Length: 280
Image (cartoon, rainbow, N blue to C red; front, side, top):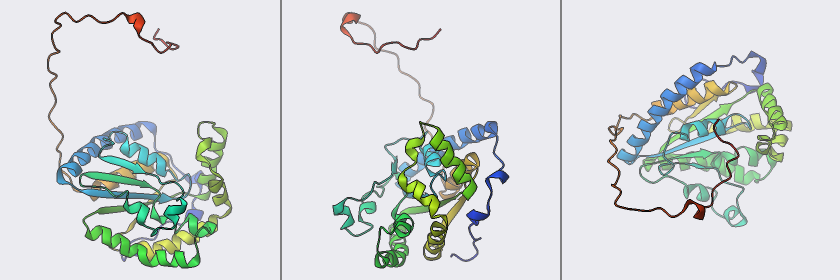
């Protein structure tokens, strides 16, 4: 672990009953302010030709997807994109482990957010036995070198670990089970992770031991309160890249082209969506 850094909180010692929730009014006001700053950051990244990679890792239901959604919400998807790779194909499984992630790295002026990343090998693959011991040990040896290589190439690499307590994770799992619109978020692998809580904790500790380096540290987000976690992560991301405000000046709309006798075809020729909902 990098010197001078505090150890990550012990997730098993936290209790959902102790969580103090950030009020909605404060959350929405700060979210709006941070969105404005993220747009400024986007302009700066494009203007300076920066290449930014942000990794989001952590327990299932820790809130990674939620913060990624809030970060990208006000941004241009042409310059900021999310990468969430599926299970590797047979061909990909035969490649160098980092190969399919390298293909997703940003070009100049882009920021890429990885919703899980190459750290799958140190987490789910390790715990579920999807990789051999030799592959796992090789990952621990090569990952720090791989990340140093990215940094030497000029890529800004930022890694977040979302820490959630046992109680809070269970509460979120049960909420997803009860809500039909969220049930898709629960995979058989997520449910299996509940039975292997300690194994995942040990895997995370071992991962930090090798990959929490001075050049590429892990930043732990206390994620038991989703609203606080989102704001804290967004504010920290903004602090990691010094930027200036390059927001364009207000745009003045040009006058509409004058009508020189254009006649629209009959409205009956068009197919409209049925108006099931109309203003009253």
